[in-house]
Amino acid sequence: MGRKYRLVFTPEQADFAETIGGICRAVWNTALEQRREYRRKGAWINYQQQAGQLAEAKREHEWLTIAPSNVLQQTLMDLDRVCRERGTWRIKWRSGRRWTPSFRFPAGKRITVERLGRKLGRAKLPKFGWVRFRWSRTLGGAVRSATVTRDGAHWFIAFLVDTDATMPEQHAAPDSAVGVDRGVKVAVACSDGTTRDRQFRTPSEHQRYLRLQQKLVRQHKNSANYKKTLAAMRRIKRRERDRRADFLSWTANRLATRHGVLVLEDLQTRNMTRSAKGTLDQPGTNVAQKAGLNRSILDKGWYTFELALGNVARQTGCRIVKVPAPYTSQRCSACRTVDPASRESQAVYRCTTCGHEENADVNAAKNVLADGLSVSACGDLGVTRSAKQEPAGNREELPLQPALELIGIPQL
Image 1 (tube, one colour):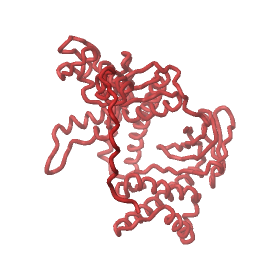
Image 2 (tube, rainbow, N blue to C red):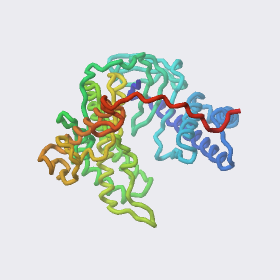
Image 3 (cartoon, one colour):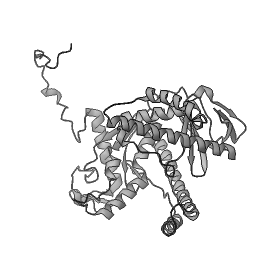
Image 4 (spheres, one colour):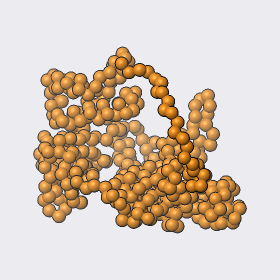
């Protein structure tokens, strides 16, 4: 489990953390350029080779010795992992102006954590010494690693803690199931008729953010006033992000604690929020409308909510089922008739066949639940009865067929 706390750095410790973050950024960029150069020549370099070269570089460049060795090695490990997962050419550089300083201490045995009082604790980090942080929650286990990150004007530390907890074999309410529909008007709608939503940015903050944007355009880039305006904009965004994370975590905890089965639509959020601008040869259509839809989807945090459900499900034993998303918002939950005309508006659903009227998001959540129950019963993604499910009276014992020879490349 992760435990995140806000650090109380001294000015010297804050400057030292900035220095280590800059060194890690330089190591990342240099190692990434080296990997790309190897790929241009048709070769490959791995972590072991780069770690050995880093040890040699420390003898020539004294500034590399300022940062702890295991922190720089962890930077190379992270780069090696993402290069293997995404490819060398899809990894981004770490810019000095845009990248948020972050580094990890992987050796949990070298980290000591103590509680000083009701609101304060301290941790002993390599080359940092004792650093204080706000004790906002119990640690609850042995520390495996620690990650230090700067967010705006504040520094945070996240401990990876081994709590020795295991996933329950059965949920407290195994027979309780609920369908969840994620929307742009209402963040979460459930099949039991409940809806959950919250305003993440107040109207006054929205107006202030627009004024700051207009002010930023008139200022010289990278000037002192430009940086102040940008910092004020980021503070508004940070409050909005914190409110969204709190709401999604709270909602996920309530749903995964009360229900043994959660059914979600299998949504590819990254593909759904792509721009519609197109290319020079084939320009896109309805670009402004698509941009507004993308902002609404990202504002509700669809993917973050799915991650939060998965984290809580590990502790409660809740089972998450995903079903295909097409036609869930156009199908009547009463008569199962699919008609786009039944969706009169974003909030009203009135079936053109049977006259069933309901909140559109709740109707979609009921369809999601019905699809999820059919998946659980039949083992596939059938909407009604599974094609794999055959009536018992039609089943016959078929004679065994002779085994076919395996045809392929012989192994030497």
